[in-house]
Amino acid sequence: MPAGLRPLKKPVSTLEDYRRALPGSAFPADAVALTIDDGPHPVWTPKILRLLHKHHVPALFCMIGNQVLGHETVARDVVRDGHQVANHTWSHPTEMGRRPHRHMRRELARTQEKIYDTTGHAPNLFRSPGGDWSPALLRTAAKARLVPLDWSDDPRDWSRPGVAAITRRLLAARPGRILLCHDGGGDRSQTYTALRTVIPALQARGYRFVALDHRHP
Ligand SMILES: [Zn+2]
Image (cartoon, rainbow, N blue to C red; front, side, top):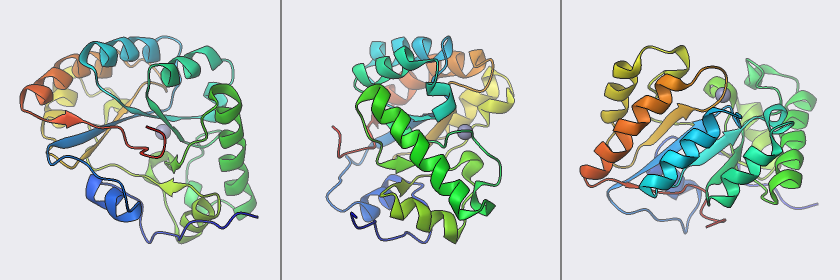
């Protein structure tokens, strides 16, 4: 049985945390990372992929296993475009950190298997739904050799607060941050419209979008 990772006391939420958790990874001083959760989605994921392609921006897609199911082509397109994929559970349960161990393990393993079977890529990163963590969940992730990942900048785009609010919150990002957005879970037109402004605006500031999962460049 392969050895697990050393469990972290808290999930990675900045690029500095990431560098410390995964020695050997390095980011330029002006780096920011974009993470996109809850897909793949047949409408919003392709639109966001086209936008990322246009601006040469890599992103990490935190995929839900039961969304990969039925949207396999979309999941493959994400990887084909050179983006990274993370494990975001099978069914996106609430209070993931308080689930019985068996349940946690199954959520992770089933998703890992589905993403690998679909894309040929085995994620190294795991994001808990809603950022719900516990020591037990951190241990389970480590045993599954998954690095726990949070975020630093949350525009709460899932709640559809309006394009202006999402844009403003994302433009508050600074170098070293990990930004959270969503391509799944409902109508993501506000997120998409905000990103059309935010990506070139952050690039114009000199920020560089970086890929997170360095073991799969
Ligand atoms: Zn989510």
